[in-house]
Image (tube, rainbow, N blue to C red):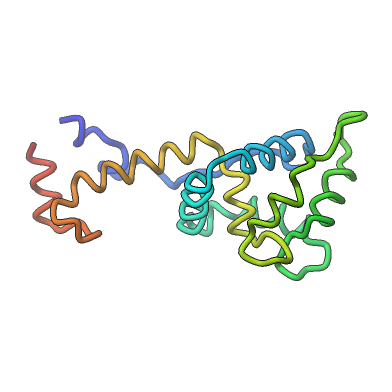
Length: 162
């Protein structure tokens, strides 16, 4: 019965939302960078997978911010571009330091030159979004009785009948 009440199964769960964080807030961006840097490799990989699967509509705000930070328009956010974005922020707290780990963070990017937009989205993803996706994936795996990675009509019907 709980399965039938699930919003994603009823179809009224709506599109997945991304963080509405105002990225001109350097403190919030710095916090995201530091949290991502402190996370485990598995946690970072999970964030990347989820960011890759985000619908285009959910990435629009993130892409706008990324383009604003990507001064040279090469499609990668370099350490110098991230530092410039953080230091030029109008709301930057007086005396706040830039994350010392910024170079290390950017070193884990798929390109030696910096983060692409998907990696940038993974950095900015709120923990709540990661947990929601994890719950959805766990539910999907429970329904996928034959581990095919696909839900057949039979598997879905069996789940609803429970």
